[in-house]
Image (cartoon, rainbow, N blue to C red; front, side, top):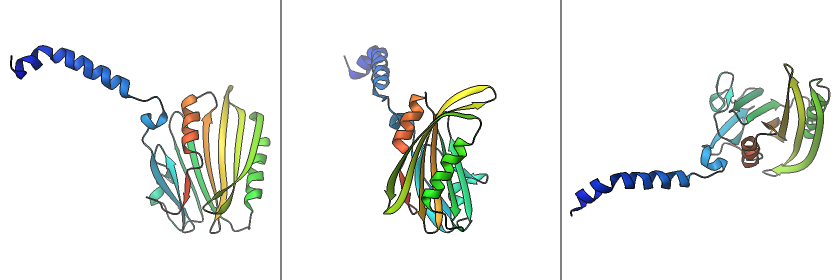
Amino acid sequence: MDIYHFVQRNSLGFLICFVLLLSGCSGNNVRDKFVFGKNRISCNNTTITVLTPFELIANGKQAEISDRNADKIMAEGHNQHIRIFVMGDKNTINESISAAAESAETLLRNNKRVTNLKVEKADDKFNNEDAKVLRFSYVEKAREEKTALTVNEYIFLQDEVIWRVIYQYRTEDPIGRELSAQLAGRIQIGAVF
């Protein structure tokens, strides 16, 4: 029997084995389900690079092609599991990162739609720059529906720009939690390719 007839006779078996092999190869973690890329966001001629599973948008276009000299930027991206916000604001009032962290907490504490607020605070560094890391968990009521949310926020000062990088997901979403664990804090100063 030549190889052609052997393959022809056994092609269904090969196909079944191939499908079973492929189905067993897919991993069960977010690295196997999402493609991650680097997004560069600029404000006041300062750039940071953030790892995300989607493109960040600012002012209706890719954040990467926004005005590098703008005094303020807000970039956002999301999928069904996680939302990521990156905000840069020229520090014209000499606000400290501690004051910026306090204002983030105060904003949530004063929000009437937020209940069960829990706050964790830590100090960190990004490329030798001091940073504040905040973790909020709370229940938010919107349109008669309550949603438990978890937010990880990183606040730091770089070349007179206060940066805030925020990762938000539904607390009950295991994929959102895993994405946040993979992404949160993966921030680099400068344009990294």
